[in-house]
Length: 419
Ligand code: EPZ
Image (cartoon, rainbow, N blue to C red; front, side):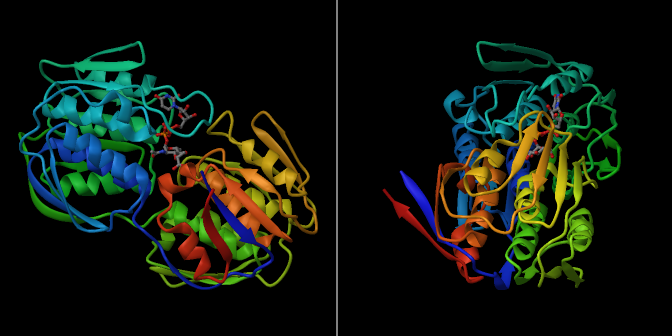
C-alpha cells in the first residue's frame, strides 16, 4: 500500500511542463489497430492507462517498442486474434475503443465491459447505436461486449447525448467503412480532434472534428509509416492552473494550448486570480484569497467536468458561498466528503454542491475516490495546515505522469511512502 504525505501551506512557484493528453493517448493507441503498418507516437504520457493499453495491443498481436519513456513505435501488421484479454479491458474506461477499431480492422471483437472511475452509470448505448448504424451486430452479456460486422457501410448517426467516447468510437469504426459517415451532435473535446488528426496523418479522411458535425469518408487502408505527437493534456494544465490559485502561488505552465483552457482562465480571473497567456504556455498567479464563483460543468468548450474537483478545492477556501452544478456525471462529488474531513464546509446534493468558503483547511488522512479527486486532494494537502496523507494512489497514477515530482519542483513538500 502506498500513500502520499504532504506538509502543507506552501505557495507553489516555478515552472511545470505538461505531458501528452491521457484521454487522447488512450484512444490513439487502440486506433493504431486500424493501421496495417508501422507508426510512431511521440509525447505519450507514461501513465498506467497507457501501459495497460499497450499490454492489450500486444495480446492482440501488435509489436510495441518503447524508444523513450514517452515515445513508442507500434507495428500492427499482424493482428492475430479477435478476443481482447477480458481481465485487462475491465481495468479502465477507454478499453471500449478496441471495439470501434477492431470492427473496422477485422469485423469482429470480444472485450470485457469497460471499467474506469466510478462517476455514476456509464452506459455505452450511444456507442452501440453508432456501430449498429454502420451495420454491426453488438451483444452485451455476462460483462462482455461482442461485436461483429460482415461489412461496415457509412451512415448518418445522431448522438442523443454529447459523448466523448461514443464520438471517438463511431469515428474509429467509420474510418475503413464503405462510403461516408456523418456524426451529428458530436462532442468537441481537444482529444477528439487529436484522434482525428492522428488518423488523418495515417491516411484517413476525417473532417469537422472539433465541431458538432464530423464527416468520415471511408478509405481502403491506413498504411501508417508516419510519426504523430500527442496533444498536451488540457486537464493536467488546468489542474496546475487551479493549484496556483488555491496555493496563492505563481506557476508558468509550459507545453499547453491556451485556447483549450479558456473556460478555466475565465473562472480564475472571476475569482481574483491573474493570467498571462503566451499561446503555448500560460502564467497563473494569485496573491489574495479567491472570491466565490458558480460553476456548471459542460461538454467542451464549457467548464470541464474533469476539473470540477480541483475547482472545488479553490471554492472550499473562497470568500463567500459558491455552487457547482455537475451536469455530466451523476456522482462526482465523493471528494467533498474528503475535503470536509479537512475542515471544508461543503454540502453535496445530487448534481449540485454548495461550498461555504472557510479560512483554511487542516490536514487529515484522505482517500482518493477517482483520478481527478486524487489530484484535488493533492492540492488540498498542499494548502492545508499540517501533514496530510492521501491513500488509493492507483487512481492518480492512471492519469498523471510523475505528479509528485512535478509538484515537488514547484515547492510542494510531498513524498510517496510505501507502507
Ligand atoms: C470521457 O469519458 C473521459 N474519459 C472522462 O474523463 C470525461 O469525464 C468524460 O469523457 C467527459 O468529458 C476518457 O476520455 C477515457 P462521455 P466518457 O461518453 O467518454 C453519457 C478523466 O478523469 N453517455 O462523454 O466515458 C454519460 O453517462 C475521465 O480523465 C451516455 O448516456 O464520457 C455521461 O453522462 C473521467 N451514453 C455523458 O454521456 C453513452 O453511450 C458524457 O459521457 C455514452 C455516454
